[in-house]
Every structure is written in C-alpha cells, then in structure tokens.
Image 1 (cartoon, rainbow, N blue to C red):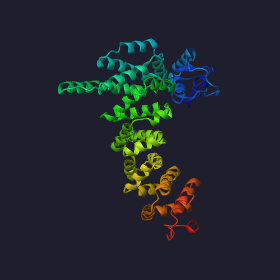
Image 2: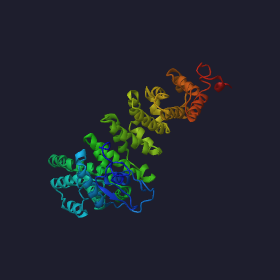
Image 3: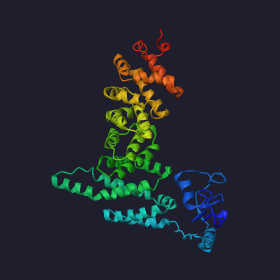
Image 4: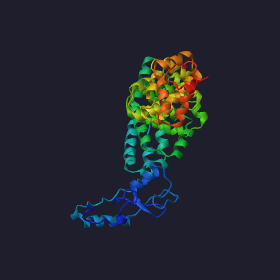
Length: 421
C-alpha cells in the first residue's frame, strides 16, 4: 500500500507511525491512536506527552471524530489500492453500566458469574474501559467477591453432614473466585487503587490470595495470585512485609517445586526477591525449604534469567546463618553455586561469588575449606582472578582466598601473593 500511494502524515499515529483507527487527543493537543496512547499512559505509566515531552495535566482522551471521518473517507477513496476502510470504533463504556452490573450481582454465584463475564468482556475492549471500571468501584467489588468466596472455606462446621455441605459450597464457588481473580489481574490496577484496597481490607485480600495458592487451582490462577500479591506488597510498608505469615513462604516454595510453568516459577522467585531483604523473611523462607529447592532447580536450569533470579534469592538467604547451614547441608550446594560462576552472566557470577564469600566469612570451617578444594571451587575462584570480569566479583574472590589462606597455602591454584605470610 505504501509503495503505491502516499498516506497523509497527519493520519499516522506518532507512536506507531501507522494509520489511526481511533484517533484521540490528549491535553497537550496532540492526537494519537487510542490503543497506543492508552498503553503509554495506563500500562507503561508514563506521565508525559510522547511528542512534546510535556507533563500531562490529565489523562482524559477526547475522540477526534473529524480526523477519524477524514481517515475513513480517504480509505474509501483509495479502496482500489487495497486500502481497507477503518471501522467506526465503539465508544468507551458508560460508568452507569458498570455500576448497574455491580449492583445487580447478588449472593448467588450464578448471578455473580454472569456479572463477571460481562465485566470481563467490557474490560477486554480497551484500557479506557478498565480505568472507568476502576472509578466505578469494580476493584472493590471484585475484592469483596474474592473475600466472600475464600472466607467460606474457613468456616468450621461440626458433623460430617455439615462438613460435606461446606466442601460442596467451596467447589460451587470456585469458578466465581477464579473469574474474579482473573478479572482483577486483567484490570492492571493503578497504584492508587491498589494501595486503597490493600490498606482498606487490612490484609484480608492478601489472605484470600494465599488461600488460592494453597488449593489445587489451575496454574494461571496461581500466577495471577502471585502477580497481584507482588503488586500489593509493592505498596506495603516494611513493618507489613516483616509480619507476613510463614505459610506464604511455604506456598512460594511449593510453586517452585511443582514447576507448573516457567511463568509461575519466575513469579514466585520475584516475590522471594522482593521479600527476602528482611532478616525475618529470610528465616521464614529457609524454614520453608527454599534453599534446598532452589539448589535442586539450579542443577538442571539452563534459562539465563531464571538462574540469575535463583542466585539472587540464594545470595539473600545466605546472609543469615540458617540459609548458609542449609546450603552446606545440601550435597550439591557449594558445587552448583561454583558451577554457575562464569557460565551465566556477570550478574550470575557476582551473586555466586557473593554466596561463597558469605559462607567463607561466616561459616568458613576447615571442612568448608577442604570441601571447596575437592569440589573445584578454589580452582574456579582462581580463574575469576585471571580473566576479565567485574571488579567487585574479583574483589570478593580475592577475599575468599585470603580467608582460607592457611588451609589453601599449598594449593597450586592459589596465587602466592595471596597466601604469603
């Protein structure tokens, strides 16, 4: 098409440089295709105009009907050249429709499913619809659905008959909870709403998400729960992060063990990285079996990014005595960490050497020194000193050798200047 006719430049979106199907104008007076500018503002969270670089004073998108009609007329005139006519876009949903759908939802799971299905359809149409749904209270509604359905599983009933009724009710409500969870994830909730929900529910929604991880849900639901938890915990203050329950770490480790998908594994690792800078959380993660699980995964892992994330988590966990003890108790602990040096990336090598440094400095017994020699750790550290790699990594490797200078004095792998008296 472009080789036969010339497209008027003002028909092109400044972001994609393609013909606009739904031109909208932002507060700076520049017109963009709706899909592209919505992605820029609401998904990428940019607060400047892509063309002028001015700060946006508002996020209202005004449809440019005149330009759209010009584009449609031009497409019709050039139909013989293979240009397809741009269809008239659907207008954004009216806020009152969302409010009515939410108010119509009752305690009946069947009514809730109908409401949720319609909300999902509306949310899938555009980012503007998702923002309108936010402002209409959809996030709070979905949170209440999640809480109501997860809460039913915790009631204690006496007697086999009543217990059976509760179990049937749980199965009965699962589709509702899954649908609400999926829609919450699809909405890509803004930070301000997420913070409001997280603080307003006093952690109850977090509890509901943890219950989802405990049950035998499909892997997508578990990933959605993990991603939402990560977004919520981004809003949390340090005291809230430190007070997280141990069962969260148990579920994260279980997801790593299950290996239900690469996405789920990476989501669990991201959460551990986010939570383990705090000492109490490190201990909880270690007690949940994270060290041994990660070492087992590292043995066969070839994915660069995943290996880096695992080494970052191990580095955090080895900052506490419990984590170092678990690493040393694992038969392949030191060996697999050493193996990853110089085989993944600069980040991977740096983290692996830092793990060995923490072990050597705080848990460096004679047995550890001897084990490092037998497993080839010493040889790998000596290689780090000889090749071109990050300065910090070399410094840590040099410190490790100095810490074990007496034990390694006679080793041919060690530079003499590092073990000299």
